[in-house]
Length: 272
Image (cartoon, rainbow, N blue to C red; front, top):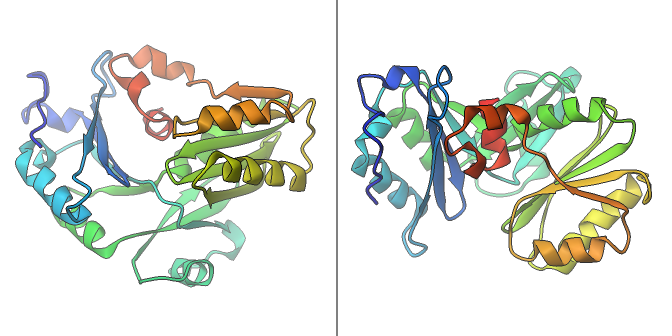
């Protein structure tokens, strides 16, 4: 599980770089870049052995690759999870996230975390397993924990302001899909749905489309992600919806260069 880095990444200049580590169900991916330089965005994916406990593979990966211990300008831990809830800012109180999460999700107690977003004024409350949280907090220098939807919510809100039509933003992930709806910057709905086959995904999309009052002819369905079965879903959606578009990568990403176009949209948005 040794990760080879270019010689231009070393401990002497690591403090100039930003490290983002993204926990995926079957492994992890990470990006490394100096925000002041062009063409130096590094992105790599690491797959873990399914038969080995995730925390064991994570520790092995960390200890076998000493660059993770370098001092960085910032370190982000991006958590990809459907176990989250959005709390309006006016209702959020310090340390109330566990109460909201326990109400919405039943299961073993895990570490509760929050991200604040400005538009809308809200808090994304989410969970991370205790063993992963404790290991990361000990091993990385002042890591920032980010839910995968946090940067996307602000990106989509800004994009929606520029269009009079309603927009449904869908991210296809292996095992679940995120659905977020906006109308001219106003958040109408956000939720994630588990699915095991294309028909389930199609059902959730059309159900939310109808319940949020979106119009088949003029409103937009925007998607990203390459999970299995996506093309089947899109083919069937074309029977019902007029405007189906793949999400455009923000233009700022093209200016950065390097591997940035290989990264998932949440990491690209976090960079921007």
